[in-house]
Length: 321
Image (cartoon, rainbow, N blue to C red; front, side):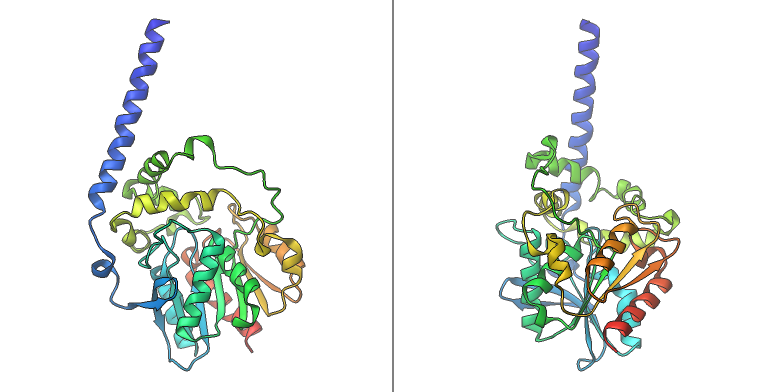
């Protein structure tokens, strides 16, 4: 028995050393500041909720399309679609919802769905636009909440593989091991901001695993070297793992009451937010269209950019004739 205990203790020590190493490595990587690392083709837009970073393409007087990223993205991950929108006569604008990307982080660490929805509304007020709103995955929650709070502020809504669990019973809670911020910091440093794990982590969301290319990973990983990136993501993590409490965007009847053009785009092989969730939304939302993309999973803009962009233009054509 004593030998087993000693082995167990050494295993715990070894795990602590390895995980501590990941945290130290993350700390050593995070040396950049947003003003220096942010890409030159973007800009900070001053809003009443802090500066929001945006990348845009297209004529100022073209119909605006506002793109909202998911939990593994930022505005730079939309560049291909921005170029397609520009070539098709739209003004495409992609923004960073903090703590992702290069927007100002919140001093109180408020990154929940309601706060993110208010940032979207603050951005369109500051930019004086009434956009067609397009949102992917986790970002769809904030986008739908923004639409439900101010439906007249948007021309249409397009949801891509939306992470939109409906009618939560309120019993969900953060797993015990992740309730301490320090442990979440360690978990993030070993996965999300760890370059050695980034490919495998991205592939978990993809049906076409080979599309997790070096070029894609380089773009997605750019903000991970910002000062405090790991801790900011650790503060944000509970909003990803625990469905929000009562909000209009969590209730089936609120979707049934949506009164603006809505389109849905879904990867047929999505295992993160399976297709039946998109089909359910299509049934709930009056007049909603559903475009299903074959042989792609949760991130169609990475897995098949050409098919995705064609679907996006089709969706916009349906909601913005």
